[in-house]
Length: 364
Image 1 (cartoon, helix red, strand yellow):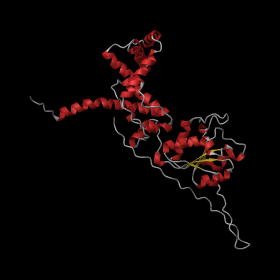
Image 2: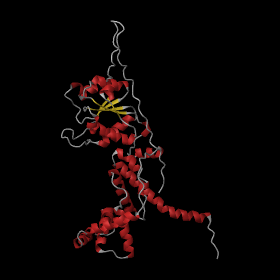
Image 3: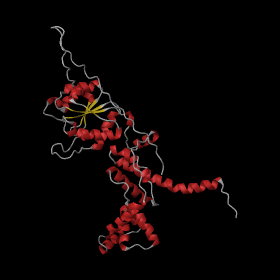
Image 4: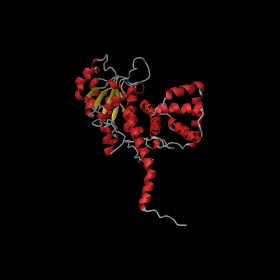
């Protein structure tokens, strides 16, 4: 018996044929991740960009099904839903494989047609000559309620057999990749280049005291109120702008639209507002301003948490004593002319630094 000796060219060709399919999946996954990042709120983009390994297919799929698989997983990641449950594309793949072995039941055929309608665009359906809607409706009328039963049965089986997916991690692109994504309108935070973020509620404080602190710390005061007006004349938008000039910016996109009705905190335009903060933090420290005295009851805390998700740096919530230090207890005078000593002005803060862990990107 003779053994055929493979040349390096044969080995390379065999390896290339095996890897070509993997590389194709990688290209599709990358394209869907970029689409999701562009459409998602800016704070969610690092997590979506780190979902590459989560997209790894556990079964062979055609392009349209695999892209639908990626879209469903990316939506779950953004919504904080379970990523390990089988996707509708995986259900369709099982139905297709079953049909190659044995004709499907009418209810299973109807489910498959429904998935095809969800995945394929109307133009593709028309080119394929498929009248999916009519066939699906006819089957559903004949077997009411059985679509969901078939889908649940397949998902239960897949959940037992498919391995757990890789969890997404926060990842920010670097170098040329970052530049290309930013040029395409997909903006990511600049991480370690960010300056410190502060918040302050002006209740019980004068504009002069806050303005002096902003100037001493070379910061930008961003007004997060939906309507930057106040019964106190010094906290009107015009008065603040007149005092601080270019160190003041009113960003109504960061305002809480439910501040009057007591509803849950909802920012008017979170993506636009957070982008203003991120751009400013690349240049100088930022102080988020609102009227509320207690930060835990104020929407500025929610804004700060959204920024922290990108910068991975803790926010410093300023209090009245940070702006106006309390005087020290006077010491006993040594003579009648001696004056009581007071505490020295606040010189600054010890800002903790936090470096995000380095993460190495692996392939499928």
